[in-house]
Length: 460
Ligand code: B12
Ligand code: SF4
Image (cartoon, rainbow, N blue to C red; front, side, top):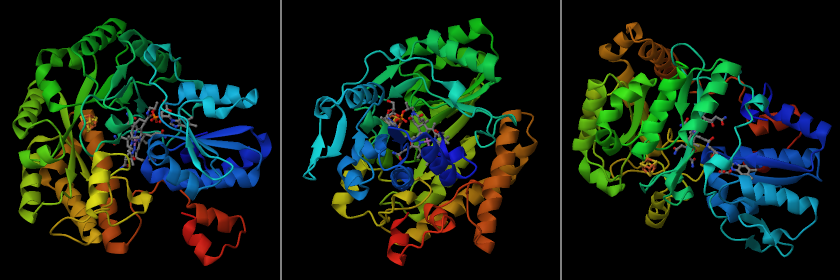
């Protein structure tokens, strides 16, 4: 059950638990920003059926296992790391009433309240042993499952895990301990073909952190897609240095259906890139952007502002630099996600000013910068850059672009994002809230639960 797609996120979950009385429920927390909602879900499940065993997984609970278990007693176990084998062994052990301390990758509090970690679960060596995702169980045509591309509903797919680099802010690299594994191109193509034939899906955001770590993988993908002729379209993620290395493959990528590369270019100065251990230079960023344009591929850059030494001049230069090159502007505020090197560095330096994990979504400042101590001021700076970017005549004209992807993307961002920011600033309306979103405390009120003010604050 993807609760983010429920018409009534909490009520539908509670009704399902009451009706089905499951022995075990697994909760997935894919983002730190969702940590409290995961905990709220655990509380609700226990309230609806106290006998249900709750196990939680995902990056955030893996990194913060003890804190999460102590903050939320409704969570019985945490799966630390990759889930498939651990969950299977866990369920067998529960069924046979075996000793759970023998199941690697589990964290829990024992009867005395001590934190227990059973040890690292080795990564699955060959991702090809995993079956095809159970798409028939998912709400494939739900209106919120959407990416603004060609006016059609896209889908996120995932064909590899991890990354070989170690950027200080990256939770993925920390979670997969700087390793990279992938599905074979044949299985990737089988999955894409199934998505085309059974669900009419032909536009994808490939969630792999770094798609073309090896040339062999890229060549295999290109060949498979050219052979299958499924006429599907992809937006891939990569690094500037790998795009440069694979220049000879860029036409092949385009012919295989790739329309855009998203690269983590982060900033326009080598000193910041060095500081965040990007292992990449501004010169490489420019070259990669030029090559992509030369080969008629769109450029999306994910960018980070809010660095400690950043000045107003830096931000203006940043805006000018990236405003010149990119088709899609992925602006983020640098965030010390738990588990990352940045988190431990910033914690030690005392620079983290906001510990409310709901704000750890790259869209809210949680650390101050040397010249801007006030987080709200940094949030305003962020929104101002976004608004300035999209309100430029050059960007506005993209809503009429002959390129359907660019046209739809910009229509979406200008009407939904830039307009939303403007309304927020004038009338204080909320920004980017999915229509069905309900805060847990509002659900508790709806349910008729009178909580004390103190508990209400805790019910994040
Ligand atoms: C798909 C995706 C999305 C989709 C989510 C759709 C959905 N409803 O699932 C969309 C596009 C909506 C999205 C949005 C956002 N995302 Co996103 N997204 C991803 C992406 C690309 C893939 C996630 C995934 O499915 N991975 C594959 C599975 C196999 O890996 P996994 O989730 O880690 O799960 C494994 C283990 O963790 C464990 N496990 C996980 N859950 C459980 C549960 C149990 C019970 C058990 C036993 C084990 C277990 O087992 C799994 C298999 O081994 C990741 C990047 C990535 N490559 O992982 C980013 C990522 C998760 N997203 C991220 C972020 C920040 C966001 C946003 C906040 C961005 C924003 N500013 O808006 C929003 C959040 C909005 C939201 N509503 O969730 C970050 C999270 C970083 C962090 N640590 O907080 C990631 C890691 C990308 C990144 N590097 O920045 N995202
Ligand atoms: S290159 Fe991207 S995925 Fe790899 S460690 Fe850096 S930020 Fe993470």
